[in-house]
Length: 173
Image (cartoon, rainbow, N blue to C red):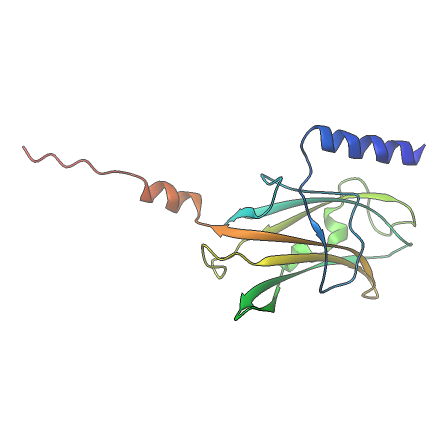
């Protein structure tokens, strides 16, 4: 019965367009989740707006019983053709258990978890850069649970974009 619900949910997500194409991590261990949706992004690179929260919805199956989980983010910038890892501090948003939508910790093996990650895009990420980010969820012992890799592009804050597109009309009469 549980597998039927999971399959139905995955099909519903696909039909409603609520899936973002993500890849298996290359730098960190972890399985792909059942489904990932980054708000406003179906096909990467995902446009993430500076000074706003990126909202990442992840559905995954708990591979084992766990008392706690933590989400880690690493951006990879290409310098001279080599990927340079830059850990990104998620602050309080890193405590995965606080953002489970359908459960709470501890979780049991085989439990289907619906998780929403909020990642604030700081001004330290310059507008126009296009890193690839790996998001990974680990258990209380640091053991890999899931890991996704997605290219992004940082865009200007909406207020700044709106201000720059305003045209002033000067009356010369």
